[in-house]
Amino acid sequence: MNNSCGTCCTKINNISVKRGTKQILKDVSIHIHCGKLTVIIGKNGAGKSTLLRAILGEIPHEGSITFRPKDSEEKKIKIGYVPQKLDLENSPITVYDMVASYSSNSPVFLYKSKKVYEKIKEHLKAFSAENLIDRKVNRLSGGELQRVMLALAMMSKPDLLILDEPISGIDKNGKEQFYKKIYELKTENDMAIILVSHDFEYVKKYADNVILLNQVIEKEGSPLEVFKSDKFIETFGEV
Image (cartoon, rainbow, N blue to C red; front, side):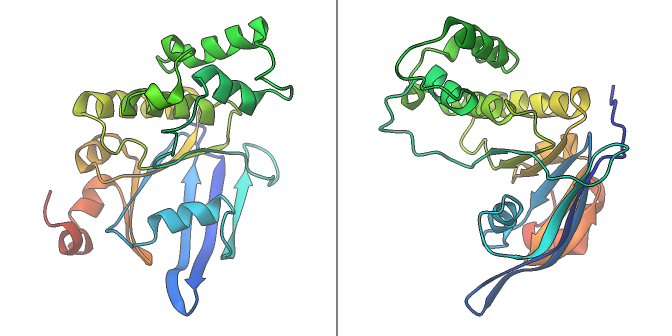
């Protein structure tokens, strides 16, 4: 059951990005409502990750991002983020270390708080990752790391969750579990989610709104509307 109130809204207004004289994005505007999964698709170089970095405030851009909560005035938006990949190959830290350092103001490497440990373990449980708490992050499989990163992104109870192709290289079963979890997050937490993905099978099944991006928004609508559009077929063929 979807308990979305439908009134919370993140407005991405006329975002434009230039790199030198090259236009990367031009006047991209999207409204993302709570309880909805918006999926951004596009070919390589279309500006998908650039758009996410602009929303996160990581790169210079024109335009604005505003957030209006339910029955309230606009406020600064709180964003959770799961990147496409992390370079953790040489990292000696455990899952506990990584999550605790993010959520605690005191040094986590000097001692392990039992209270914090149990709190983190309980939070990881919601993502089927509680058994990973003592594992080193560089020993996690792709699917395990994805669950931990999703749990980490949700620690701050964000208004908007941004996911940049977080399941690249994960098997079919792992992808299905991921999309089911995303569906659960958006419905139970009434959360607005932006996902960059090329998994059209799952996009068709789970997305509420799809945006075909190529420097500008070429097509926006339901999965069926976008996948049947001339612009989509020109870019990807029929699916």
